[in-house]
Image (cartoon, rainbow, N blue to C red; front, side, top):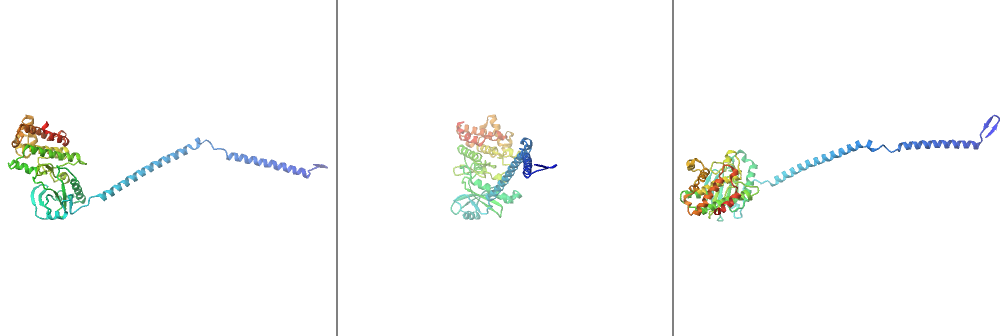
Length: 401
């Protein structure tokens, strides 16, 4: 720096140093300011516990609700899909409504059966539910045909296809039953013009138990206790098969001597198993073989079949028809069961026995025990009646009691 007069002058070097210092300070200020700004914006955020907890709860709630709604939607869709598949399977597996003969035996040809039914046949008998015929096929096989009453007379809705299909399903189920004490359904025919079914069975040369007992009462046939006992055992074995060996359980609904057929050796076979349930007209009459609860509250169970068996056993022991006017006067009991119960209480059970079968003392003891079994089966209370599972050993081992 030079001093000239009263003024001070800066030389070039001094001016350069001044500007260098000035710009140095300015650059430091700018860098300091940028550092402060960077520090402010890059400062770590506050603790998450004060800011992100509510947001986390909302997200968790949405996730849970989404899972729940997803599961519910999937469950509903699965149910709808299963119902759709079930409906489709039922539709595909439903029984077609057949017009021609449905055969279950290799010995019967459809053409031969139709030809035999169109020709003249021998009438064996009739009942409120249909007529029984005997006919011989061209191959020499003798069959029994039961022509049911037209089901258009039973109920207006019987014309519905679903009812016809249900009847065919039940008949196919009946045809699948296999037991030596049951009548085997060999074939059936639906006659569309007459709206009825014809059922084909093996022909039983000895007829029905009702026919046999009628001949006994007319002294045209003698049935020893041994044969009557065999018939009773066969009937209860047939019921035991229906009640305990079939799934689902099958009830007879119409057990009476007319529906107990006898082969050449008097071995019994039950007919019309389950048909009364299928067509209510088949046996809903006061035949004397129907359990009291069927009239009181229209309730039918396996114990109702046992009551019917008790009446059959009583008929075999006494030789009397349950509708015999004798019971209206005998001890004022008005029924076969009431009369047997009265005699048992009085110790006069032997008075109930059919005089034509009385013989050795051992047989009389067996028959008296059979009277007690019949009385138990004829109890007015279903719970007091034994089951078919209990009756089979009771009757088969009757001599050991």
